[in-house]
Length: 269
Image (cartoon, rainbow, N blue to C red; front, side):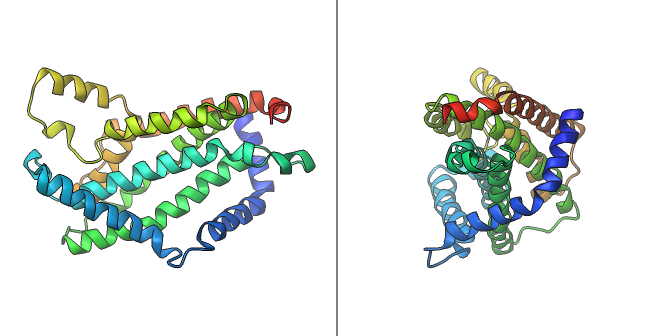
């Protein structure tokens, strides 16, 4: 608790620096892009069209009981892409700020936090693509949509915790940056982005797959978000517990690991 209070105090003190860093990254990302921010909407939209054609037409994914596959798919895409981007950029944030850290004192956790916040801003812009797909497919607008904030915000906290651990590991072991890309590629296939694991034909292999996927926190965040937006249902007790619990555990581990090793960063950068 004392550790969390110390971080909150530092966060409030350096909040304007955080805002400026997020704004700087936002400008740098779209500085040479003709489409600019529009690309944040166009990219997931085009990817959704391609994947819908492949999975819904060629592989006939609609037979698995997914009524609105386009919305189902883009929700999985957006949330997984947010987690993937947030953790990947947070991982290299401390190494990328080595020169600045040697010159002035700035709390080192600001850099992973800023990268995760920047990824959240990108994700929020990308939700425009979700709205477009929902309008195009005539998906109903449920009163439970505001409940989707819970899985989104807890995913933010979860990503921050993982990002802090990865940022620490990357300082001492550069290979982590390459291995994480391989891990997230495998993780994507076990996050039920383009299929419903509960709608597959029953078999021993499917039963094992369902149990395996149930241990994947990303699957729970995506499922909870889909439940509120696509299915129009309240979040279940399991979803509330797993999403919140995984976020708090990841953040606690991330803060402890990062704080314990941060004084050694300068010696290894």
